Length: 136
Image (cartoon, rainbow, N blue to C red):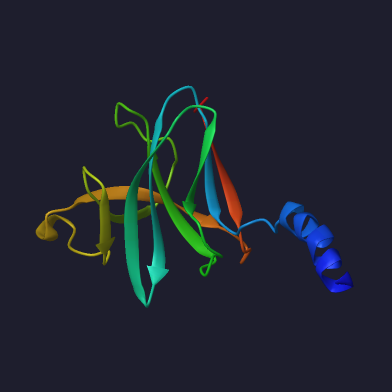
């Protein structure tokens, strides 16, 4: 009878205990406009790009919701007029609608567009937050 009493008293405490932070790659939009975001990362030896996340001004989105497995994440961010928010140097495939594309070459031949991505060094962290800001 005592063991049931202890379980009854401690169960609510376990449910109320804080949980460990979930690992993720988060993009926070600190611009004055909506940011449309696509990401790229190595998956199984191939580059994979995925998009779009529409992130409102002064909001954040977890674009990768699991522990980061790559040191480098590639980010393409544009405003609602299609103007780049980030400066980048890596060209990867994107599309006009929601997409997930494997491979970085021959975008046009595979009916995709080319986007310029910024390489983000996460320093091999489990999670990382990137802040988008207005251009000066």
